[in-house]
Length: 399
Ligand SMILES: *Cc1c(COP(=O)(O)O)cnc(C)c1O
Image 1: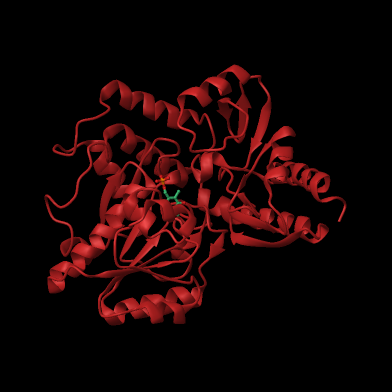
Image 2: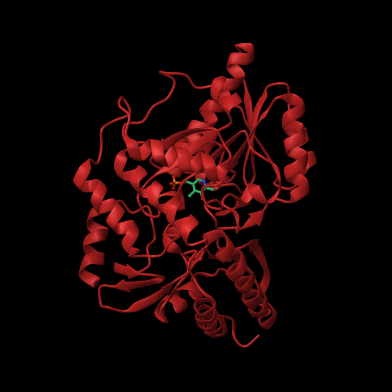
């Protein structure tokens, strides 16, 4: 394993500080490294592998598609994309789908949709977008421009113009940033990288009402919190508030790189037209075969009901860990998207947990994030809590 890690550091651009492990295979909620060591996985490749590793039906669907055709381009129709779009419309209640290769690319498309929608109304090219502080929308220039973390942006200035930042769950801060040129308000229904902050019901309703009143598009980024993670297929479905445009990715293909942005019919009819937007790979048959099978398995396995049940259990177990240690400040989250907030950086705790066979990840420096495969059961939660407790005790003491 050491040799491979050394070779990686010679060949790959060093844009990540990686944990010193090479994972070789997965099975269910477990990962195995090259030395055969087994790990319980509470990261799922960052909220991606929702159905767990080595799901035979999923693997077979991909293999079958590979033997048929992998790619044709968007100049032709392909059946997996048609089926995937139909299924995605059904679970989201949205009307039009554009498939992308990643989350960031879906955000780019959503931003272009909003600008074109506003442009068609008044022909102006100075429209503004309101995004949130502490948000994360991806690393490409447009997505970075709406990401509310100055550290990520600074060296790459100038960003795309006319982005204003407000605070999630502070409606007045949104109102203060709203002008007659605002074309969209964009946020994650549950902020992920920024520290697991769920939007409140009141905030959702007030922003929706503002958008309706001023014909502003509400764009919800469901890339991390969507696809069942909160116990609903998409996190906004808990509120009875519907976005005009939404983005999805991460768990959408359960490991095959695919994302999408979706919109209502009204926005679809009044925004991007033939020639306005494109992508070579987006929606290719292989990626869409994955999306089809994932959505089929979600239904068959009753994933959202399972998440509501096991998510409540994870919450209660994390609450008791939080009570036990003074160094844990709070627990936040919804369903199987949870964070424990510490009074110190969490890197050492995560490294200890890795040594003991538990994969965890941070969100920011002081928060441990829990985004496991959605198929975890209570026993997995108990096993996780036991290793977590030990790891915290070793780093923070018996506090
Ligand atoms: C991960 C993430 C993105 C970016 O997705 P990529 O596939 O990494 O480009 C965008 N928004 C949110 C909320 C995310 O969690």
